[in-house]
Image (tube, rainbow, N blue to C red; front, side, top):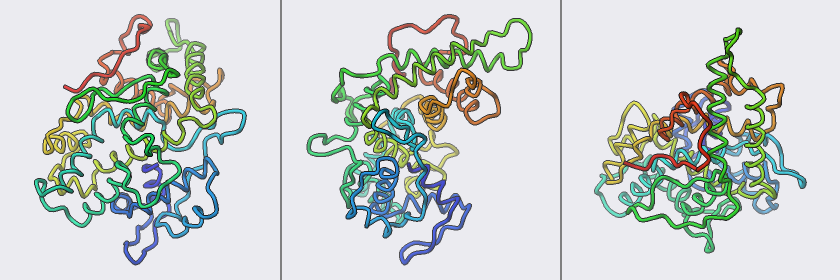
Length: 380
């Protein structure tokens, strides 16, 4: 959701308001700063608009507040496939796997510690006005200090820990937990639902291996081409089925939106134009290096594979959204591995970074993956 908002501002621009500067069309730096320094209520109202564009459940009182929001003029993308009474829809926000790989870098725990240090003392210095705005929004998005109780928010008195809610969602949809425990390295506690996609990793790694064989043989027009289009389609079809089976009745949709909003905020907070990165003197040439420097400052090391995890966040979202959207058929399966196309390049990136993050070289695998469920490498 955060990435989509920034792209919308770049495409449409933002008019000046009494408390904000105008954002010209095409200015990426000002677009990112407009989001990072936004009032939490403006962000909450935009996410509610986004949720309503898919869910359509907002009442007149809540929807009457939308026009006063800072980002009301930014169009919310239409669902890839709207939900119906008969089957699950495919939202246009990022896939839950996008949130999973970003959170697995331990960035959310690190930035939570940054907020705590800034709010409870001066060990990190005095924050700039821009970082103070960032702190307000981060507390609202990550820790529930919202000005408005949104219907898509997944925490309440019944589910108080937002990280535990996200872990439950990752477990149910992807069959995976995060590679670390709590901030003090105790085992994390969350509800492990019995209805979970425990075969996701096995199927996904089989698909990645077959896609790599297809990519390697794409220009091979003679004997020896090992591309198996039917197998690729059948694996993609089964993945589509198991993923959408968890979305029946819009199950997990609000949890997914909450998770990708939080992790999108974290991704943007580690970007090139982040005021908190400047205040922490953690400038670097890449987000993984900035995360490592910030983690060192607050005494919580980032995941050793953060570079691979953060690099595949957008590609894995595109790949899995494409699979869930049912646009891949037996006749169009080549879209998943065709070089030079967005989805083909996303597949290639995911193959490389998934291998780096898990330690499993899918490019060189000589036999199908084992049936037991592997986990991403733990924090070193």
